[in-house]
Length: 410
Ligand code: MLT
Image: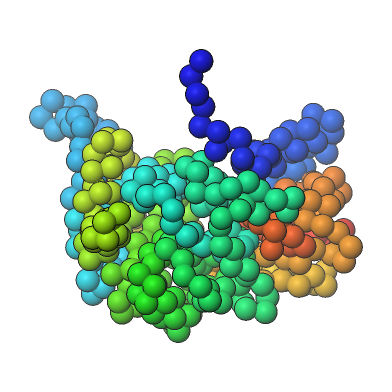
């Protein structure tokens, strides 16, 4: 009989979002009438239509594929030059990143998980708590952890607690770590990191020869011009960080699938004999072997995000979602709940009413308000006592969610 990867058996229950879906399905089957008024603010999935500029670019790309003169088969595994160049021009101008340091993919979820292919065993891995569950689960899958305890914390990982006291930006670890995952604007807390905080992290990483895996998937939602949008705005980051970004949340590509990872050529890891090895060629090789590139029409659609029309349409989408976040913050505050995030991020992080756990609050919202939220404990032990409301919804739905929050908690 074929042996399985037993690391998978260490994973706790289901992945958070399928588990929420399971509970919601059970509720809708048992309560078909109430299910008709269900509003989903759980998973951070966009709801508004794709920008016109992106749709038009994809239509044109499809037409190109319909003519033998312009047909394209396999594209470059690392992405078409037109998109890599547009990304550098529009997102990294003046930050010392070249187009061939940008790798196009079909999602940041995949990239943040797949990146472990290029790291060896035995690394000390730090994650924030609460955290996007993909970072943890993918480390479990490759065998970088021991078993989970009753609170869901895995042996072998260094957890960095994020609390209201530290503004949900963790203190620099006292000991050594090799890899640290940071995500700002943060999923799930909606917190942001200041330039001084990122400078401290870069200084730590350089001192410890650690690598920062910086997830900037929500960068487009930053409203405060003082906040850094990229880790590469910090001096020295090119030698100690890589960055993940996505078209999912700004361009509404959650169903279309396109993202990118920036790996500077100066970024190095170590070999068993103590030598140094650049990571860029390893990720390039990994892409060439395991990936055939995002599709041509999708990459054309992604590049259109940076056209003049695309920029205006994306800005309007972001303005709409951030307006939702503001309404959700106000409603939760009016219900006398402590509210965080939602100012430079599309997630509002709310303290549960006294005496209720995260899953209690999830059930109360589902059964009494018919609103789906995400229980904070699903993001880690330090998320217990909180819940996350996603601002990705129509304005009408958000207004109704606000009314129901006031009704059940007010
Ligand atoms: C979330 O709700 O946390 C996100 O939608 C997850 C993701 O982007 O994969």
